[in-house]
Amino acid sequence: MASSTGNEHSGHRQRMRKKFIENGFDVFEPHEALEMCLFYAIPRKDTNPLAHKLLDRYITIGGVCDAPIDELMNEFGLSESAAAYIKMLPEIARLYKESKMSDDNIINYENLGEMFQTKFIGRTSEAVALLLGDAKGKMIYFNIISKGSINSSDMPVRKIVDLALRHNAKTAFIAHNHPSGTALPSHSDLVTTKTVRETLFGVGVELVDHFIVTDDDYVSLRESGMAGNIFFYDE
Image 1: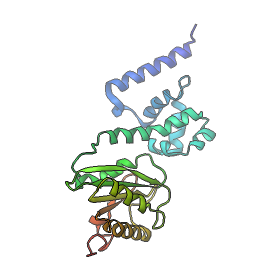
Image 2: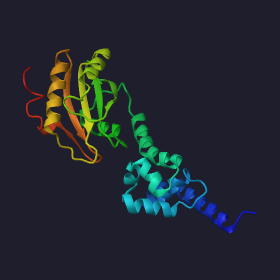
Image 3: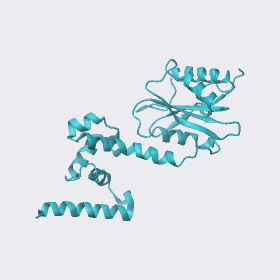
Image 4: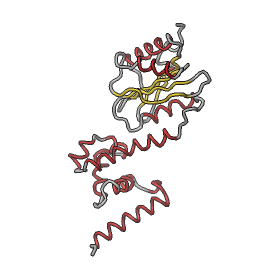
């Protein structure tokens, strides 16, 4: 016979699930939303106290999702499966947004910053994204091409050129993220931009812009003027 505690626990989950189905997370407090997500990672335990503890430490659900997996396991007692589930949440959000993009869309310059931001959802280490356009202005390639530290020596220039030639691109846009930083270019970022632009120009491809992305902001080096005359000088 099931205990009253077990029945109450099951009933609470059913009520939460019904609340979500009817309203989404709009009517949930952050700890309730996290608690419900944890239902599916920890099926036989009250996840409310854990949700509170995680938010006490990491402040926001985003902070929880960005926490190191070994910290979640060692300091909060999560199984590897439960910790991996938490890390999956922002990755699923990114895949959802990316699935809304079509590879044959005309490139909308006004939305490029937001598009690049999508590529970096859930990424806590540096990465480089490349978008290529054809002669008609259609997007023909858009993906992460490198992970790890980025500077003038680490930027995968050869890979960028190879991909541009393989896809017969005429325009290129690059972006990299500053995890937990500001969307401002370093001297190394500017050197990198100049190197990539000159190298692509040599094979008939124009580097149109370089975006720097953070969790909640981005900067276009071309539009901001922070790159000086890199995008405008006569080669």
